Image (cartoon, rainbow, N blue to C red; front, side):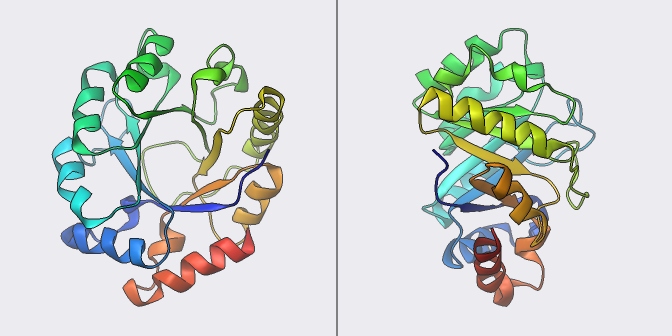
Length: 221
């Protein structure tokens, strides 16, 4: 069953010189999750932050820290991000040799587990894993950079995942990340998404605009 829409601002679009203040501001503005993109410069062509930054941000928000690891190999870093304060840890099936073992390790660490599907990753990648997942994230851009345009071909993948989740009968977040704005939010939700990662759309206009941006995204979706 599709859940109520939740908005997860991506701090990739925040002012990195004021990151703690930015996280506190979107928390106060009505964010449901804080989406944290971790990139290693190997799995994706960019480098962002590590577990020490996540730990430093944790006191600035009581909201769910939704940590997306774009790291390969990923297993060696799971415990560090769990200890840093992640609530959800999401990984790619391509980020290690044994994705089922990786998911089980996230659960063993006491965290919710997510699986991320890149635009070229088939929906079948969730098969045999879905019962163990708490979140499935569809990338509607190729990962690595913020501010990209939504890939409309991913809507069919969202619909296929919605059908699989509903057939399973388990509450699993269906999240979409990439090019989410006031137009594409509606498309993603209509296809079956219930968590929207929004970077540019949330952080545009500075802190005074965050609450209205989040409100408009929620209302549009």
